[in-house]
Picture 1 (cartoon, rainbow, N blue to C red):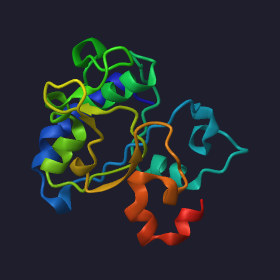
Picture 2 (picture 1 turned 90 degrees about the horizontal axis):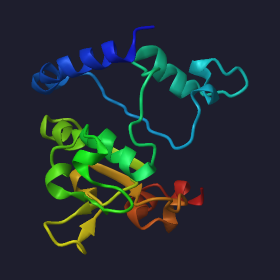
Picture 3 (picture 1 turned 90 degrees about the vertical axis):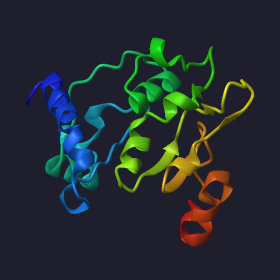
Length: 179
């Protein structure tokens, strides 16, 4: 297994090619982030009791990050770290200081991937809000910055019909709203 720093360096070094490649030559990017889940709860990491065939398949045919460091082990701030690539002291988004600035959000990897022609989607717990302009009271979930959206601000209602952010999805796929 290659060290995380080597894999991260190769990934970052390939970003210019990733963004300039034609649609037929670009790889798919699927990023899964879970709360409070041990890697040992997945089959691809050796758990024989839990069956996770789809994640196992993604792991076998793609890239997994087996070694990583979370510089901010607090939900909101760590999610912004992932989205922006910045340390918490640089992005300033945490429970005490509030939402991420729109200026920094516009430099996030979902925005850049969409600008490069990728279809972007988000589902689940977004975990932070974006501040509109300089007014502290104006904040939003960046639903319009994704092609497909099925998220919520935090611990949202995962019964799709009851989740305001997923009303369109629940209408299109009514069978899912029973979950």
